[in-house]
Length: 253
Length: 162
Image 1 (cartoon, rainbow over the protein chains, first blue to last red):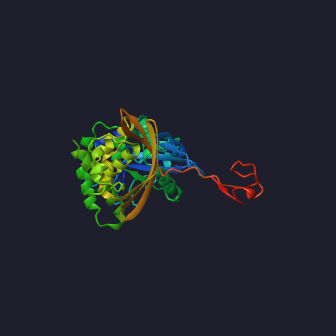
Image 2 (image 1 turned 90 degrees about the horizontal axis):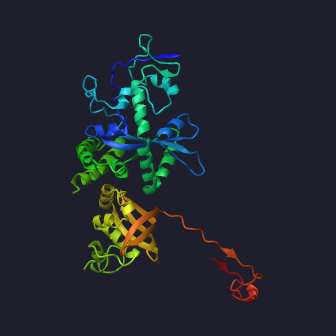
Image 3 (image 1 turned 90 degrees about the vertical axis):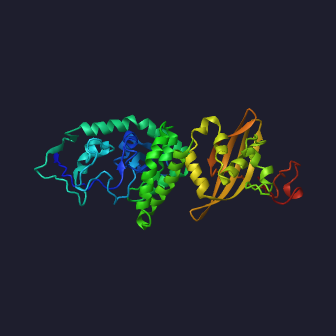
C-alpha cells in the first residue's frame, strides 16, 4: 500500500499551537510565546506506547494509567497564524524552521506504521494527495526519512529532561495529576498547560534571564491580541500571568 | 502599630518582622509563620533563603512572586506543630482569595534545623490525615480503664475510644 502527498504551500497548517523540541523552543524563544503542553492518553489507546516512550506514565488509582506527552509548545490560539507565515502563505524562516514544521505531515510522536493516516488533509487544507503527487509512504514506512528521523532522535535525546520536569511538577504541583485525569476522561482529546517558568526552574536552565527577556515582549503582544475575546480567555489569562513571571526573571539581579 | 499578618495577635515588629530581617526563627512554627508573612508582605527573599539547600533551586521564584501579588492573603492557621530535636513538622491551613474565589490550602510541612537555623525541607499539600479508629465498648465488656470491672459497673455504659 502506497500513499501520495505533496505540500501545496497553502499555509493552512501554520495556525495554532506548534509542538517544539526542547532545542527548538530555545532557538525560537524570540519568535513564539512558549508554554508546556501536557496531553494525556489513556492506556489501551493506540498511541499509548509511543506517548509513553517520549513522555511519562502516570499511575491513576482506580483508573487506567495515563501516558502523557509533555511538549514545549508555541502557545498560539487555533485561529492565530504562525508569526512567521508571510502574506503569500510562505514560511519566512524556511531554512531555520522548527523540526515539527519540517516533518509535517508526518509526526514522530506516533509510531511509524500509523503515519499514513496523517496524510489525509484536514478540512480546509489544500494538500495534494492525487496520483500526480509523489509516493511518500510505502510498506508502513516513510520514503523520505531524514526530517522524521531527525525529529524522532531529538525526542529521544530530550526524554531525560522531560522526565525530570514531570517529576518536578508532580512533586510541587500534585493537583496536576487530577487535572490530567479530568482532561483524559473527556471524549475529545484535551490538554493541560503549564508555565515556561516552571520548566526553566526544573531543569536549571542557565540562560533563564535571556530567554525571559525574549519572551516578555512576545507574551505582552499576545496578551494584547487576545484581550476582550471570551473564547480566548484562557490564552489571555495565561499570557498575562506569564508576563509577570518573565518580567520578574528579567529584572532579577 | 501593626498586627502581624500571621495571626499571632502580636505586633509585627515583635513577631515576624525580625525573622524576615534575618534573626533566626526560634521554632519551626515561628519560621512557618514568617514565611507566610513574607508572602503577605511580598518579601520573598526570606522564603527563598529559608529553603533547605537541596530544594532551594527548585523554588520557582517568578511564579511565587506572581502568586504573592495576585492573592489576597486572608489568614494562616497553625493546626499542629511538633519539634523533635532538629526536625519538625508543622501542619497549617492558609486562606486566600484568588481570581474572585475563596481558597483554602492545607499543608504538612517538614523542617530541619541546621547551624541553629530552621529551614523548610518539604511540604505535602492537602495531606490525608490518618483516620481515627473508633471502637464501641459494650456494657458487659471489660472497662477500657483497666479496672477489670465490667464497663457498666465502672466508667460508663458505653464509651468511645480513639
